[in-house]
Length: 139
Image (cartoon, rainbow, N blue to C red):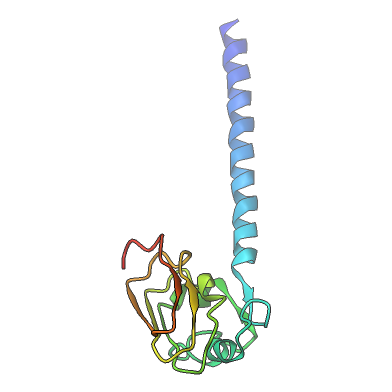
C-alpha cells in the first residue's frame, strides 16, 4: 500500500514538474519574440525620433541596421539624447534599460516614462505639460 502511494506521488510530482518546465519554456519564447520591435511609424510615429532610433544612441541602436530592435539592442540602450526636432517620444517605453533621457531641445508636450523604471536622469524641455514618472523610483 505504501509503495503504491509513493509511486502515485512520484508520478504526480513528475507530471507537475514537466508542466511547470514546459510552460516556462513556452513563456520564454513568447517573451523573446515580443521583445523585438520593428522600427516603423506604428511603434515610433515621430519621424525625427524614428530616424534617431535608426541611426543614433552611440551608434548602438539598431546596430545591424535591419529595421528591427532586437532584445540585445534594447537592453544595451541606456542613454537617449534627442536633440532633433522631436515632438513625440511614443516608443520610448520599449527601452526598458534606459537610465538617462535628454530631450531638452524638443517640442514634446506629453511624456510617459512609466515603462522606463531604470531611469536615473531626466532632462526635458519646458514644453512638457504631461509627465508620467509614477514608476520611476530611481529618479
